[in-house]
Image (cartoon, rainbow, N blue to C red; front, side):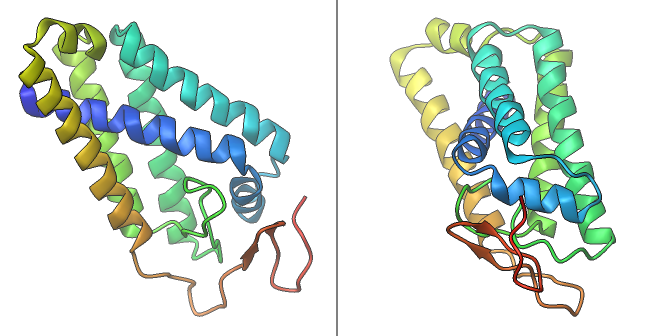
Length: 190
């Protein structure tokens, strides 16, 4: 159960961090969604991203099978989007998970999303107590070990995703700028 605790907590950290990054900079995901044929404006992306943060916080503090199931479903949805973008070879420069940094959807991103989905689903099946309760019931050293391992796992996952080779299907990837992503002709996505 220790490994599952670490994996699920890492998934929650990743969900909260990626959500916060998209709240801060929704244009990247809005542009990626537009390229995938889903024109979602940045304000809607921002609201959905705030929902990611709230879901992660609720899963950490409250727990329960439905919430863990929603976390798992979220990651399945994220994996589906990354897989779709890669399968279609869309020239997406960023998924939005890193805010203003351009990190395109990659194979590593797909694997991280699927691993997080598996951890959340396994947590739901295993009983889905709140990670906060699990940490409170642990010894201080045990809780510190779980938190440190989860943060480490989330950082490693972020590093792997951010270091993946760019894949553009033979086309130049969409260029992201501080003002938001631009299309191949130089026009801004809005």
